Amino acid sequence: MRRANLLFAAALLFVGCGGGNVSVDDYVEALNAMNTEFSPRGEAIWLEYTQNAAPTVDDLRALLDSTLELRTDVEEALGDVEAPDQIADLHARWIDWHSGLLAAERAQAARAATASSLDEFVQSAEFGGWADALREGSAMCSEFEGTLNSTEAQNLFADTAWMPSDLTNAVHAVIGCESFPDDIDDLATLVKP
Image (cartoon, rainbow, N blue to C red):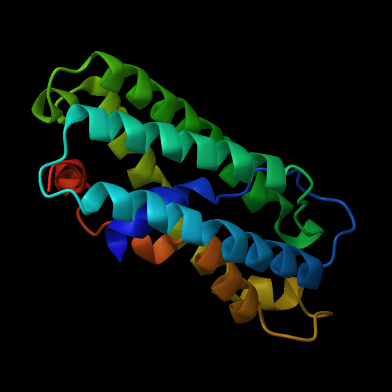
């Protein structure tokens, strides 16, 4: 369910510190636990919004407020998550992206507070900023996957008992790479079904 996962996908991006002596297994375990804990909430937030055949600006405001509350909870949970040394640089880039996405979503919520219609909202610069952040996140997902699947990654994880594809699968589950919409230019249909 693309709509249910879109905001949640962005919410579960890496926020913790990079580097350190954390094992890859511990990192994957932490990501999987967060997915188990927070995914149902993210899906419920979108289900509530999309079950309304004709959502209003008030419904949108409630959606954005709930999404920001979830993101805050996820950020707190991720505060202690550290990336293994092998991917600390990628992890740090995701943290930077996530910060930008949070700023875009806060701007969206502020804009929704003054919007008089959903049409006005989806035509706003704030909505466009959110779309730009999602485009960047989608591109980073592809880059992250390519890096983890590269020959270089095979060498980085040579001392790990399992293949990097297992890490890729865990990362994708948490980031939700597959839930970024194919056509980000059509995001307005998520808000205005």
